[in-house]
Image 1 (cartoon, helix red, strand yellow):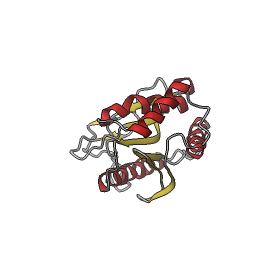
Image 2 (cartoon, one colour):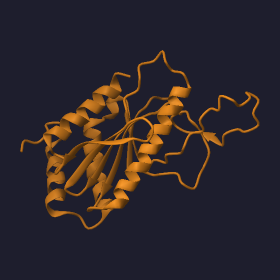
Image 3 (cartoon, rainbow, N blue to C red):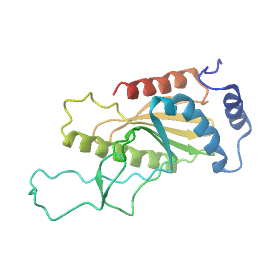
Image 4 (cartoon, rainbow, N blue to C red):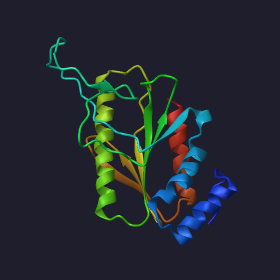
Length: 204
């Protein structure tokens, strides 16, 4: 299998060793996976990769509510959403965003979750929650009536469980669609997909 030319040789070698030999602790995956993501989503392309980003559910505007409503949000998150702190906030391993100098204009592009080995239902449950967040975020964007702008690409997610890599696309109303399954992070088809995500994000 040919390896992606996107990655520097040491990154390819590190990923290969991890996939062949495994690691004792999940934390040992963080550095190599971050190096891989930075190869596809570099800061020169206005990408920012957030580690353990807190995804807070936005408060969707109520069309029937008065503009003088006494309910005010606790804060505004980095993507501009009005949010409140909740006990069910979620923390993916990495969230790739398009970023600017503004403090509240980040656009999430990709959610990345990694596991040392097959996590069974736990990994899938986490991905389902991320899909729910992505759907709510998309509806919040729609509520802002940004119709004059180019439509934002759908937020995708990747679940890496040692030698099983699954790629999901978050669609409307919490729907979660598996669009690819791979045995290696060095799979050429995964390489093409990640490049496509980066190109799509840069067009917005």
